[in-house]
Image 1 (cartoon, rainbow, N blue to C red):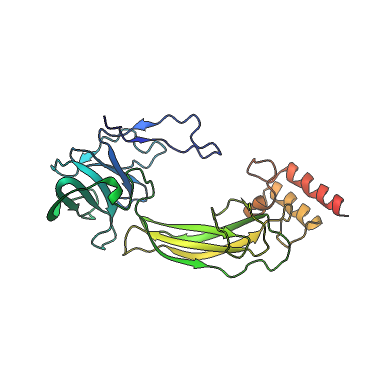
Image 2 (image 1 turned 45 degrees about the vertical axis):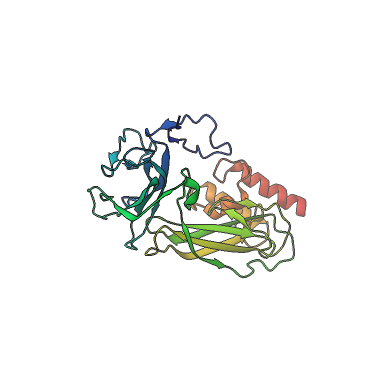
Length: 297
């Protein structure tokens, strides 16, 4: 019996699937995700010995509730592997279906809004092989799709101090066309070890080192579309250092009080000194700074 495709939405916590009740979204067993209609969210294509079927994300927090899907064509193939990738280089995703002892087929996306996106399909060639899912570059449950790593960039040393860097944060400005993404990595030892990190989220290094650097990897499902990194601002996080001058003093206490009064959003400061996981600068942070000043005096 083939297991039905099922979606379990990450709850965004440290225990990302605790209490999550999944939803079966189709009656077929092969699945691939990608932005088929170019609206910025992930759609689903499924198949397992039936017609290829497209489920368009509804753009809500329950992205496939009420979505019944549409047949991509009348083809009924024993499909073992499917992949979404821009085959013809026009910026939208096409579908490749690897069939078992049948000719594999290509379905080109027409790129026209409010129409059936993927065409009737055509045989890639007349060769009939036993295609298996492991033969493709994407597994049936790879949520990111078969992204191509187009390029990467690595910074020079950002922090020139000699003290061990335990905590760092960064902000990044990017331009992301449909079906592209940028992965950011941080290192505190000059690139000897890299760690995947997210903009706006403090990262605690499990390694020791004083050479802070960032790396960006640019990924795309289409050779015609490339994401861009416009700016990266990386900083060593020193608890209590609200103005990021490598010191904790009365100026930081004043900055915390200004943020508390709503005069400054203090996003970067919240990265510096958010001590009780409530997502804001409050009395607890001010007390922390005063205690730090007192202990250092």
